[in-house]
Length: 180
Image 1: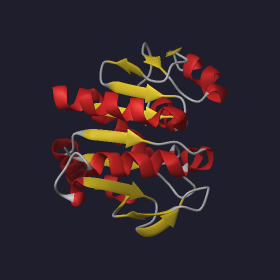
Image 2: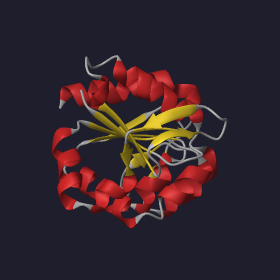
Image 3: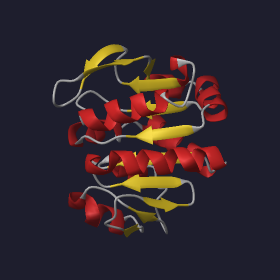
């Protein structure tokens, strides 16, 4: 299984760290799990946990690189972090990538404020989406139905409201990816 985690400096630490290591358990090659961010190398979350980004979000501006991710990667992970997502959702090339990923029916695992990236990518209309409670109105105003549950599966999207539900959310996302 190959996965791409797209985030930004100031991410919610648990929402990057747990999926990264959980997904590493699903592969024999650590390079199959890519963390893409606004910086390459060591960067930190809002609580100060450092991770290593091995790809830049700007790579998605290159249509050939974007297509490589679209064709070779199985799961897209959208972690939260209020500050991180406020910045990330301003990157049009990232929004276009998420939209194209969704149009291909590929699995998107979103938690907490990761839903903001899906909203800005205009992919939630008509879907059931779980997200952090403070963005309930954003989810509903985007044409989706907000669901307060540990995780929700709607077609190719597995969404969760909070890192409290990391285990259940990632299990559902991995199971869905394996079934495709």
